[in-house]
Image (tube, rainbow, N blue to C red; front, top):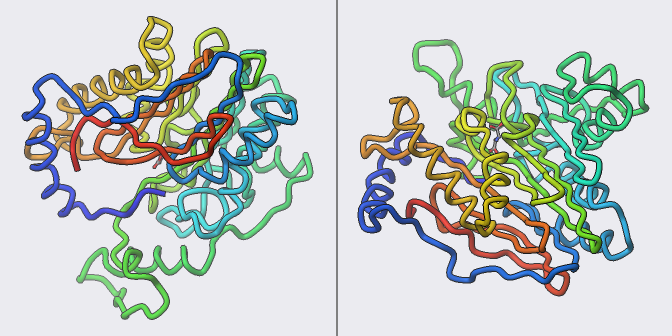
Length: 352
Ligand code: ASP
């Protein structure tokens, strides 16, 4: 989960990002530990909150599991964890205090995908997305229809709103205005970083490569906190939050979904890898385009002309090379390279 930020702080920080960009004209900050990769070996890659996911995915890959099953089993750990408030059970709710989840999966060998959006009450939307892929003629089910589908296949309806997430939502609601009837009490139960919750991003993306060179990916999220009921982000949109081409590579994203949808950027990352870029270069190239396009939207741009939102891409190619890049860094992502499971430094466009 990314840390919460306040709009004010972000605007302040924007000056520093601008300076960083200016200091490196036309450039970016590559990771100082360029990743390698051995042909034929299994790999598991995930966003920074996915170190347990890559561990699990690798264990399954080594047993010969399908890469999609491995990737999903990995992210299920985070979906189930109430401490990660960006995904599944314990995810931060929408404006009405209801948890609505988005997820997509894509399976390289069959070039098939499935997704669900604005799904309530089911804590593993990634598993429902896989069922959409396997048991329907569709790519995306939303809202009530997605819930009906999940229930029909035996998923259990649960209350996904934990007390911690509910309290964070209440703090947001109570602090919206000093001209309404909500009074903000001091919270005794929330940690300091949640007391000022304004809006957060957070998601988990997981990518996997098996030893035969087959790729798959999954992206799952509770989306933007306090989003409008029914808002769908990039995570369940194939091409935006996730894309896999079994001949080239796989890519996924976390960050401000609307900016990502506008650029279909996971697809771009895969395309760039297909043109010969390394996974890290491909992520950076996609970020540059997202940043350039954002300049046309004043609400997405800080006073220094830089994007005022977070965005991260993760990529894994067919050869087993991997990389990641963030709009602002430093930041990290999780990789199990077959020998070692560790957080690695991602490249970035703007210095935090
Ligand atoms: N991409 C997600 C969304 O916009 C949120 C995130 O990744 O932080 O719903």
